[in-house]
Image 1 (tube, helix red, strand yellow):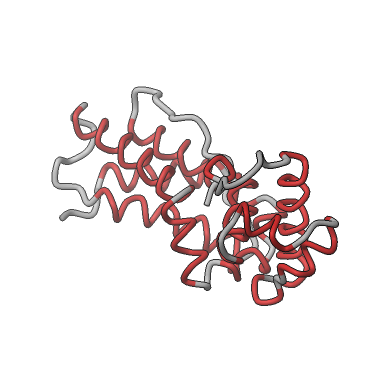
Image 2: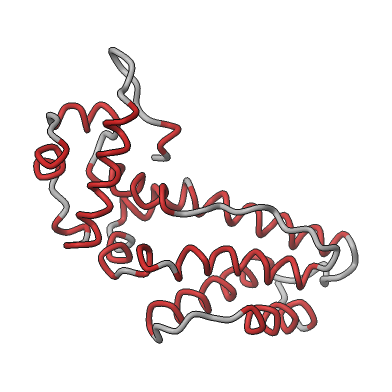
Length: 193
C-alpha cells in the first residue's frame, strides 16, 4: 500500500511517525529480511504502539510493501522519438532502483517471495512501471517503429528479467550500452504474439 494511500481512521496521522516507521521497517528488512520483520520490534524502535502502525497499514505485508515502494523511483516517462531508446531509458530507470545498495540487499528481495507483499507491489509500483512501459511500446507501434504483432508484455519481461538477473544473480549492474543493445534487438526482431 503506497504511503499516499495510508489507512486513515480517527485523528490525523503524524507524518513524522509515519516516516520513522517506514525507515525502521526498511532497516529491519535489510538486517533480517521479511521473515524476521516483527511489528512489535518496529513499534518499540520508533516508540509507538502497534496500533499506530496498524492504523496506517493493515498487515505486516502492507508495511513491508510501503517501505520498499518508498525507496523505488517510478521515474519520468521517456519520449525521445525512438522506441528503442525509450525502452532502454525505461529499463535504466528500473536498473537504478534495483542496482541501489538498499534494494539490491537480499533481505529486500526475499520480501517478494511472500505472496501478499508481491501482490501489493504488483498492484502499486510494479503496475505503474509496467503501464509506462506498455505505453511507450504502444507509442512505438503507432509510430511504425515496432511491429504491430510484437508481444509487448514479453519485451518488458525480458528487459526487467535481464536487470534482475544481472543485479541479483551475477551481482553486476548493466551499463547503458547493454540496455541500448538489448532494446535495439528486441525492437528490430521482437517476439511475436
